[in-house]
Image (cartoon, rainbow, N blue to C red):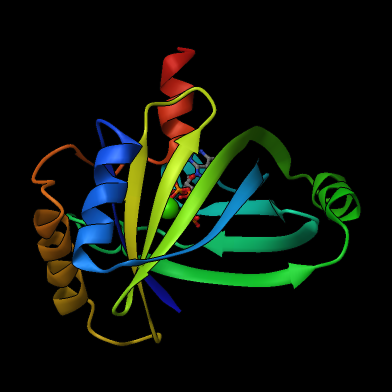
Length: 181
Ligand code: ATP
Ligand code: CA
């Protein structure tokens, strides 16, 4: 699928939660996400703008694990890119396999994410360990579908929520890396 996504730094979660309520967005799940990012032995994912990660999500007593591949961003305004994700059973064994074949752990990122749904948008309020509050709005499209309209709609929704600046194309991983430079 194609992930069309725009991220913005926000000043407070409360303010946005209130706005989301006002427009009639639905609060859905809240989960803890732990992401282990890997780098390839063949190319540097920081250069090729790709990503490989194992994500463990926890919501109450429910734990789920996914492997995700993200392709390079394909436009200059948003974070639109190909994404392939699948559920797996065992994160430790999966990390072992990746490491045996030469992939290296880059960093683990932990966050609490509150999801909201509004029309065909998925909205995430992200409380990332070590970073300021951020939010993301995402639309998922089929491979090959035109993403420019979805991208415009995302920016319109941000405007509706009172957010007209603070947009960020840098990944959480790089934002954290930059802090420790
Ligand atoms: P999602 O939207 O799938 O829930 P997320 O919001 O938690 O993910 P993002 O910041 O959107 O996190 O995506 C992870 C980012 O990490 C990707 O943009 C990817 O390009 C970047 N990344 C992955 N591996 C590396 C690496 N080795 N070096 C630098 N950046 C990387
Ligand atoms: Ca994201």
